Every structure is written in structure tokens, then in C-alpha cells.
Length: 248
Image (cartoon, rainbow, N blue to C red; front, side):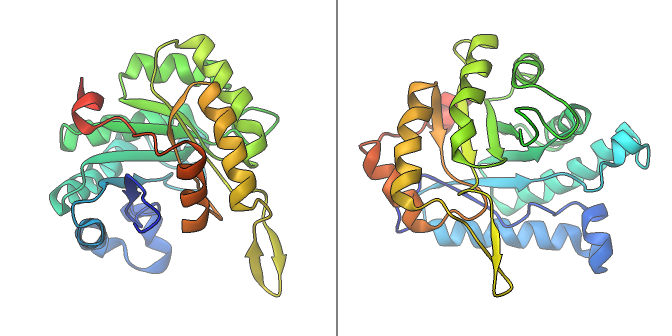
């Protein structure tokens, strides 16, 4: 918050009951998501919007047939309901590789409550997602879905984002686009993941993202408060769309 972020995420990326199953926490999924939203709201203290983070169920269950589309919708609806009742302002469905799972998450979130939805996919395989979804196809489908904003997150790092956004903008001119990449590809040093992109370098890339159409900008894995502060300074403190603007 002290980096002047305008939107912060809950720590619920893996918050569906199925994702929590391996840790033996599936029965506490509601409690975990609800409490995470409450804590994020307390931390923001009115200074930022709270986005409820919703990530993949894991292990490509729809693509591999381990979970049906209806079951996935139920999973995401339960998570979204807990986040909403905990006080989030919007949902951030992120790091998706499968468009079917993305649509299940969007449907689940809408079943739970009417809040704005951000939707981002991870284009980490030659400009496509792991399952071969292109930025163009994602933009077309997410425009049809009527989400408040969409774009790219995670992925290989900040270098790829401008081209991805340009492709999305060509397919969906006028959409509110999101840029939220990793701070580079991590290297394991002394047992810890170290990300190579410095705050200053991330800020330089952020200017390219704006020129490519991004209106909501942040960072994913490896992004620190220093990265966010540098981006804010480089962009002159430009404001993100308000919740009312997103709803319209």
C-alpha cells in the first residue's frame, strides 16, 4: 500500500476447494477466502480497491477431463461467494491457460455476485498460452464474455507484454487492457527464486504497455513494492479506472 497501489489482490490465487485439497484444507475453503478478503480490506484501509484473486484449479482438469465444466463453475462460484462476502470490490481471474476454465471462472463469479471481473491469461509459450490460446482469440472470447477488463499476466516477463497487448487491441479496440507480467524469469539461487527485472527496468517497460493500450498496470511473480512505486513514478501517477467506470 505504501507504494501507492490503487488495486491490491487477496492471497487466494489457489483458493478453490479442489486446489486446497492437496493441503487438506478443502473443507476450509470458504473460511480461507473470506478471511483473506477481510485482511486485504483492513490493509487497504480505504486507500485501494480489493481484487479477489482467482487462479486455475490446477493440473488442467477441464482439458484432461478430470473435472466437468459444471463442476468447475461450482468451484469458482463457491470461491467468489466467499470473497464477495469478505468484502472484495472486484474479481481478478488470472494466469489462465485454458479458455474453457476461464469461462467457467467467469460464469461461477457471476453466479455468486454481480461484481466487475478482470480476466488475464498467461501467454508463456511462443506468444500463446500452454494450451495454444492466442491473444487474438482470448480478446475475442473475453469481449464476448463482457468482462470489465482483460489482458496478460504472469508469463515469461515484461519484454513480451507490449506485443501481446497490441494483438489484443487489434482484436478488441477500445477494451480496457491489463498488463501484469512477472519481473522476469526466476532463477533459483541458494534455494530461493530470484527475479532479474529491476524496478527501474520494469518501469521502462510499463511505458511501452501504455503505448500498447494498457490502462491497468501492475506486476505478478517477483514484483515488489519497489517495482510498483517505480511504475507509478514513470507513469506520472496516472489513475486506474474507478469501480463505477468498470461497471459501466
